[in-house]
Image 1 (tube, rainbow, N blue to C red):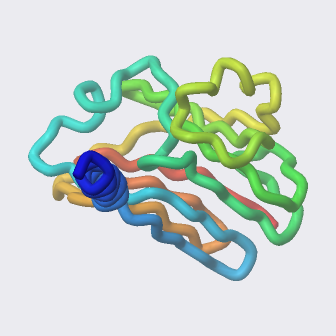
Image 2 (image 1 turned 30 degrees about the vertical axis):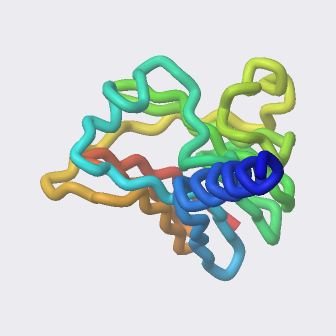
Length: 161
């Protein structure tokens, strides 16, 4: 009987963790692919509330967001080699620093301080306030711009291939 109860407790724990995670989605253009966990606002204050200013954020939910460049790129004016990188953001009220890091498969930004020496680019961009709320984190790309939008906040990084 104890084994049966243990089995069902384990099964319940695993399914709770599985269903509690935000879905993984991707945005893709000819030269860029972004894969990220897509959290929802759910009535919360996102920036300055859920995600504190002055901290490094994984730019998504669960596993850190990954961005793949199929060709070498000027990312916000910084030269970046083709490849896959973790994407982090240092949040500010008026500007964000978008960070590309060569260490992949990070869970969130919890271990960021241990890998920050692997940053390949840091680009500071202004925050734009949106008049309409974006319920789910949305990252888009058109090979000229990478845009991150959530709640009433949006930032964009110019790209040149």
